Length: 101
Image 1 (cartoon, rainbow, N blue to C red):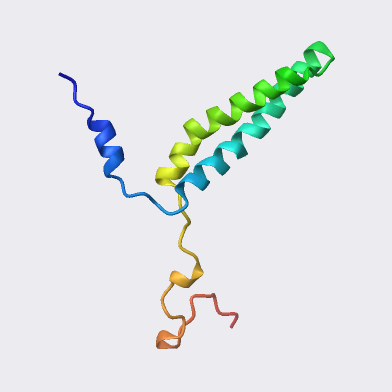
Image 2: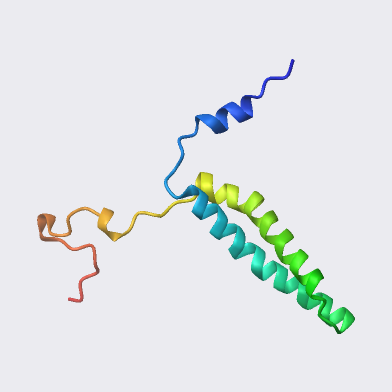
């Protein structure tokens, strides 16, 4: 009997804030340029833009982007710590910037 340990591991991951939004935006950010590239190649090859083909290509590319790249962005994405995460710059009177003297 096969156990669904992968699904259990996914369920045990605590939901990150804005993970769904990050997945959708990342999938769209990949899907829209990919669909534009594929539609451009089709226009170059045929010389005519077919709106139904372009629409189907756009929807397919966005769904593919959300289901592949979006999953990685949702589970492993986040923001890097910014400059506020550094230690106090005034400690011991030294700056982390290179001195000009």
